[in-house]
Image (tube, rainbow, N blue to C red; front, side, top):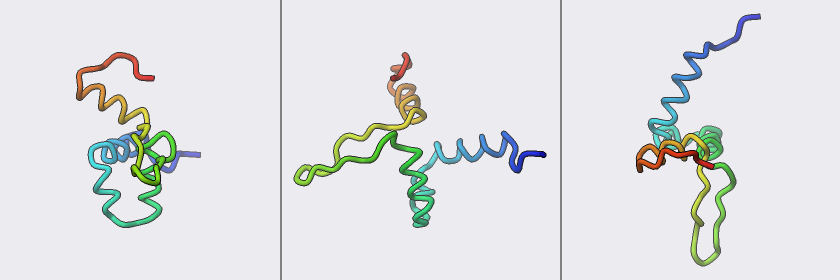
Length: 77
């Protein structure tokens, strides 16, 4: 049985997401917004009642991109 999508299509979709997650979020579609949250953060966002949202834990792709941007390209845990 042949796969429904090719690896190239999947890679293109992933790169489009990483290049501009806001564009997907801004679509307003609740399912897409949940997907953006799940792909961007490694765990649920925590919120302090008086201080607001806490510093988030980003998913691995965003940690790597942040390391590249800051020049800190050693192993990211």
